[in-house]
Image (cartoon, rainbow, N blue to C red; front, side, top):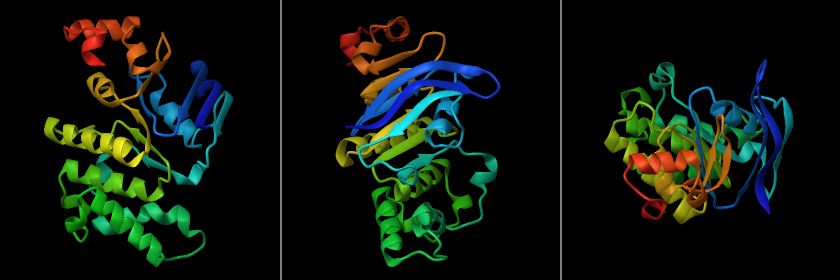
Length: 239
């Protein structure tokens, strides 16, 4: 059973950016969303999260996935980078959707936050102020926070923006491990085509030509062939 189905989706605000978009995500998929600026990638993410209504079509969740149980790692702003809170406070805040009307975190929720920090290798930073951390450490904190909300699915919007190449590679590896070792379904927006081809099982490309399919099939498209040609590769080299 599909965890996410988009059927005849039209995305936009005052005018449509994407029309009649159809794709399906199953448990354990790693879907990378590619496209130029303005192609509708972030609008799609907001629509999937219920933050932006579609202009048409439907988004259907299934296989036990509920809206409040989808982890989300947005692009960071400068104001967020300077947020005056401890690492532990920020990670625990990912449990807020579980609290309901309770004004405090339960022992189980605190334990969940501890496990998420351990999984991200940041438990030793939990008393540190978030604003004093490096960019890579901050993204690990936000990923741990997202894991407190995520039950089965994690959405990421340009997660390596502002990171140096080494920190970017490390974060991509962490995300890939969550998918391969923990079975977390990943939907990630990225400008980094190489990262998509390295890790993704499926590609959604938005723009004048819309494509949805496997990574292997993407490399037979005009866009995929152009990228492979720039890298001096054939589709079989990359898959």
